[in-house]
Length: 148
Image (cartoon, rainbow, N blue to C red; front, top):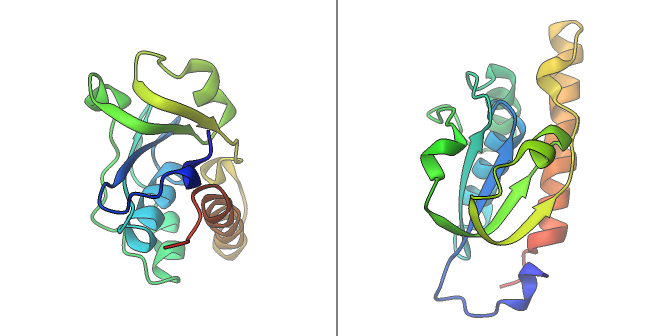
């Protein structure tokens, strides 16, 4: 299903982004959609094994003027019984283990490497997080579009 087929701008479509820890990828995706596409979408995020939101994810989103510093990591269990237009898995582990009883009208998958698992100096890690952010936001723009 192509999200762009929806043209009714009076109804916001809902998106649930899922990754294992809800610490970086899904947090960045939620923040990006809610900051840049809030006229058409309302995003949420959750994890199968929630961890604390990554400070580096917060930092690299701040670089593009998106504040996710007040975000909290959530379990997908918080969303059981709620229906979403799109349930989006952002890592292969989440796709494999994603509870299919999460109610999505459409399921989308695109795996991104987990920057939380990277090792290196602070600057090397920030570079990795920036790459994940840039890849993720480009993919979101491509899939969900930015047309009015």
